[in-house]
Length: 357
Ligand code: MRU
Image (cartoon, rainbow, N blue to C red; front, side, top):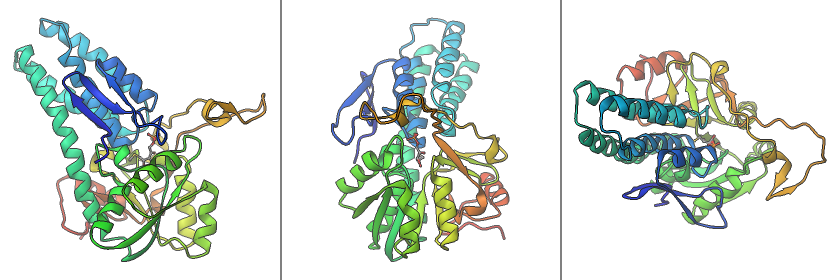
């Protein structure tokens, strides 16, 4: 399995995704500030991986604290959570991961638990979230595989694979599950300018797994759809609003409209913790704006004229009306998403398909 991140006695070890596909090197974060930097600099990226990294960052910060009293530890924990929360704004999993450790910490401190026990407990939880991420994505994959054709080509955008998670992946997890079940699936991967997650990461991990993969430029999807060469689209998500509007990598919105125009199903695959019940609709999702340099430079070389203005939003929002289904580890959500999401949030689990009666 691709080791995206790992808790080690020395700290949290991250596969450096900025170096792929040329080098497989690791960055060891030995304190929470380094974890924050690793997330901000996209050494680790992808919603699920960001969520667990943030949880491990908080756990690492608490574990390495030299505080000897609970009040002193409390002010450190505030700073740790704040620092990690300020790394990237769009993927709600970041805040989920921080919240998971913080909730346990709050519970334990309210019972005056000794600091040494708090340290042990938060590390155990962070490591459990890692295992649960992979287990959830395998469940999600099984639900999603049933939606893919017995044979066909699936287009994906960005990287929602093992590299975007603790393993297996969400959108790519569905593809892996379908192939494990004997379906003959090949993949078209969008290159995903400007950070090239498709070129560098999706192509890398799929080829490594011997999954037939064709890389296309972002502006080629419509051409291949019009030629009948794509049977389904599947993408991940960074945040899904309570009404089903989905924030994902910039360019996803355009692909969803192309899919609609060509009558191709457009699936979103994401664990349930990517659904933000507090955010009513997609227009309220904060969109990260990244550095102009990602657009102006290719491998350190400027390819644009000096003086040109640059915009670089990292995500866009696909309205729920373009989403055929949202695949989670709890089952498959269908429109009307406002209702199906609420029902799933209150505990409904299904074997194959989730629908409002
Ligand atoms: O900026 P990134 O690489 O962290 O963004 C990741 C994405 O937007 C992916 O598309 C992915 O689908 C969401 S993470 C599973």
